[in-house]
Length: 232
Image (cartoon, rainbow, N blue to C red; front, side, top):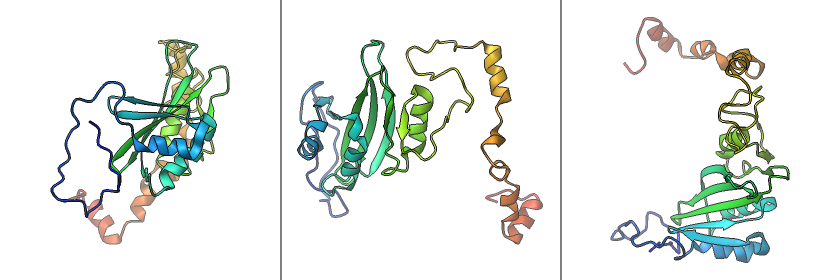
């Protein structure tokens, strides 16, 4: 069965405690992460449902309170979710089902894993708060969700495409209504890609390593100029 630590695990943990993989974990039900009850106590109706599947706890939360919930999980000493694992989204083939935003969090001190979900109706703007103010690692993960699903993260410092080029006009490739071969012809896609101008977004200093070389100490520049490879 799933084992949830009641107290932080640190260097003073008993040496005879050996981590073991859980066995005979039921598909549904089983013990839930204690953070789920803590969230219900702290936020009430913001948490309408808790599911446990294969020993992992998923907490459904109100999409309008995402930042509040995540900040509390991160800052509260009894939770200490200090590691953001992933941010993603799920769209089902059933067009009536809402899109789900998904956050995977870990509390390293307590050895806990928690999955948060928030539902967004497709006939409403796909907007949710950025958790970048809490986890700086959310930066590129949220950009990917914007790029692939069209979900906008309010409060993100630099929300723009990260996989497709910035002028990509075909929409959001991981949406279920996106055609497999794209909305435009292959030749049009190639033309758009070739027309993309990275200098419009990045400075030449960011695109070149010349200045970085000039900033190296004189003896290092001399060795590299003589053909010595880094690490020799």
